[in-house]
Image 1 (cartoon, helix red, strand yellow):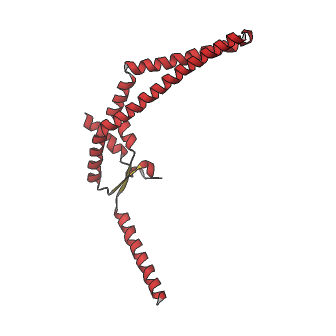
Image 2 (cartoon, rainbow, N blue to C red):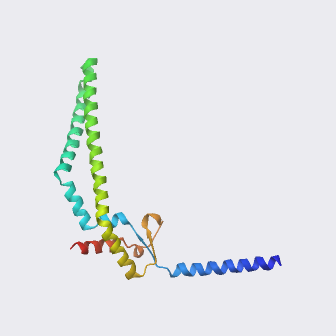
Image 3 (spheres, rainbow, N blue to C red):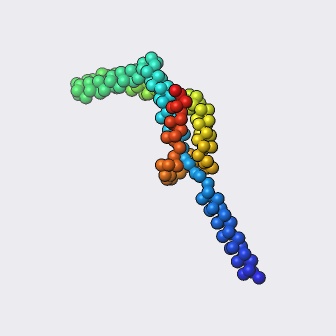
Amino acid sequence: MGNVKALVLVVLAGFSALVSLSAVAEAKIAVIDINSAIFESEPAQARVKQAIESADFVALKAKLEGALADFQALAKEAESKRLTWSQEEAAAHQKKREYVKADADLARRKIQAEQQQLQQNIQQEFMPQLQTVIQEIVKEEGISILLRQEAVITAAGENNLTPKVIDRLNKMAK
């Protein structure tokens, strides 16, 4: 009797596995890289270009470049004159270098913060359009499962919706 139950369980498990496999085989699966879809679109690229060319961003970048140039100049000066300096002169020079390095670090952090804020703003701005485009393409192509590309180890190029989404976003902007 125990063997019959075991056999029935094995048959049922095998049958359910076949049904599951056939359901997966019928499902059309696709992947998308959300960030690429947004940031490779022409409208998002235009926003990035506009932000990078803004007076505030250009000033921050110039401040960083100036501080880095000052730091390099101070390093060269220290290399060439440090043997002739007194302890006080060496300490004063080191203090100058630290201040210039702090200025460069602050400018770098401000630039990074501006870039992160820009990314967030662009994502918020384009997410509704992106969702609409994705829904349209999924419906048109009969896709039943859509995965983030980051979650997939490998996928064939024809299963990647990212280029289609970028193209559709570009067309919407025109």
